Amino acid sequence: MNVRAKNQPQLSSTPNHANATSAFSASNIERIRADFPILQRSIHGKPLVYLDNAASSQMPQQVIDRLAHYQTHEHANIHRGVHTLSQNATTEYENARLKVMNFIGAKESREIIFTHGTTEGINLVMHGYGRRFIGEGDEIIISAMEHHSNIVPWQMLCEEKKARLRIIPMNDAGELLLDEYAKLFNKNTKFVALTHVSNALGTINPVREMIATAHQYGAPVLLDGAQAAPHMAVNVQDLDCDFYVFSSHKMCGPTGVGILYGKAALLEKMQPYQGGGDMILNVTFERTTYNDIPHKFEAGTPAIAAGIGLGAAIDYITAIGLENIAAHEQALLEYASEAARSIPGLKIIGTAQHKAAVLSFILDDIHPHDIGTLLDQEGIAVRAGHHCAQPVMQRFGIPATARASFAFYNTFEEVDALIAGIHTVKKVFA
Ligand code: 7TS
Image (cartoon, rainbow, N blue to C red; front, top):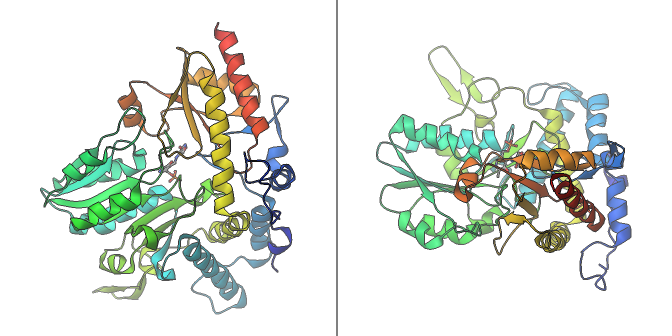
């Protein structure tokens, strides 16, 4: 029944060191690309060049097969049936939880909570921790480069509790100012919520150091790992973060599922996010006792297939190796950034020293939506807009950017296509 093993991507055990530009040889990358049926598609008669991976990544056949196998042969509700199908589905779902635990280096599987995605994970912590432990006059620190999903829930909490939101500023390269960060702490600081990697700028924040600072003041730290977990090895115990959230659909898994990691001691102190089935031990009209973690936070029937699919996605990217993925994507980023810098009128937004493979840019005075639309005519998918990070746009005094975001299945030829596409856009507006 193991539909994954036979199709695992095979990488040569000896990386091609002669080719200093990538962790993958040409045949490796072709083999990887062959796993992704959608990459064979054409858009407007041109081969698809998919560079919108920060919004959502594509799914390999191994994960598609795992989902189809589950739906075809294995589906039943979990955690409640004595019948074989239900017990098997429960085992598969709980196996996926173990895979997530290993993937991020958590200590125990009860620290892994299935959510709908990053956004729900943050909202769960805001409700479960924030509403219980943050009160009037308290302060929450976030950064100037957060996605809206790591701003708005904390704003809602501050409004409700009369607490205060403090913002870590950044420099013109899109790097957080660590001196200013240190100055924000005082006896009222109760929580820090910070993105590991910025979706709009690509900045990789020095989160380990920043967590240590917060802990000196006794403030727990939530890391938004939506843009980090798919692209670099993450170890939550090594980082010592208190919460870590990410989404399956940005790491080759299905939509509708994500992960909240929390330290067990904190999760146990938190109030449930939603009430319902599965999150209880005993219910009477007088009193309900809650289930143990993680189930206390998993009310109702979850996205079972998606959770199992996430497990298959983790198998897939683990077989390729996060170090290989990071190295290949860095090579793509460097190649693309250098080529982009040589285009007159193009300005890269986000030039941090430590960056993930996100290339946000503006071009002359062409609106990014026009750039996105014209690139689409060439078969090239990029995102244009504020990337759900409007304060980042405000910081740089622009309404929007065009953004190419890379994954391990992208190639140098695709970067060439992007650069050629940008030249075409320039010609149209010349
Ligand atoms: N946090 C970050 C850093 C993100 O990049 C995103 C999604 C989210 C949170 C929300 O994730 P969700 O799965 O709950 O929606 N970012 C993007 C993006 O950059 N383009 O589209 C979605």
